[in-house]
Length: 245
Ligand code: FPP
Image (cartoon, rainbow, N blue to C red; front, top):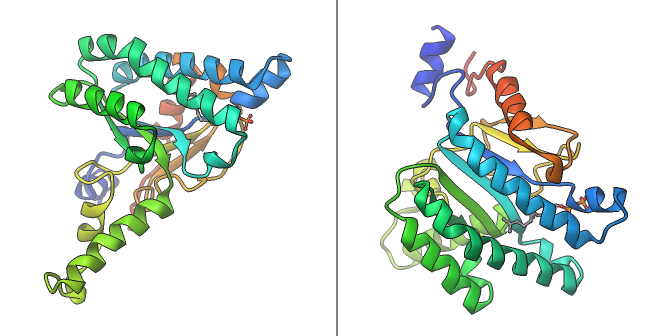
């Protein structure tokens, strides 16, 4: 079977990058190199988010998932956590109109409803406002951890089994996928990590089963349209086999 046929059967073409997921890393090192406080690095990171959200549709990307705050990021000093939450609030408040105008559909994965209640309200309003948009789907991973997501999914399955609604033998990969935060979304084609690190760090563990991985040395605050185009070009050189040959 040709590669094109094999990969079409697996849900995409060899070179189509529909869903890009990014581990945005290196804000702290960017700030340190410039002798600036970490907050300046995170602020510059938000500017990179703006650039990438604007550039992604031009490169044919339909879904952009950004790892904005992990369930492990709570271990950071309280003032840094509070800075990150403040930046998120500011980003949503200042960008939502523009995102909506550009047809962006904003949604969230992770245990984001456990964030501060005013922030949850802001996020939910933004989600509802943009829910019917048909442009770029922007997914922010907030208070997200892949293991935590799987635990939450398993709990719902276990509850159905305990209630007699579900036969354990009937549980399959589709059923698990349908209970994840990403239910209904195609899996990422490419997971990209900036700043030279080559780890998944608990990001989209289930969904990345057949994703390509690209690591770039660029620190997230320096990431731009050209860097994004380079990553897309690197992805296009990959042969995807989805476990076949
Ligand atoms: C990693 O840098 C980045 C994060 C902690 C998450 C990403 C956050 C942003 C881009 C800013 C907030 C985003 C939005 C959309 C409001 P790091 O601090 O781990 O960098 P380091 O490894 O160099 O210290």
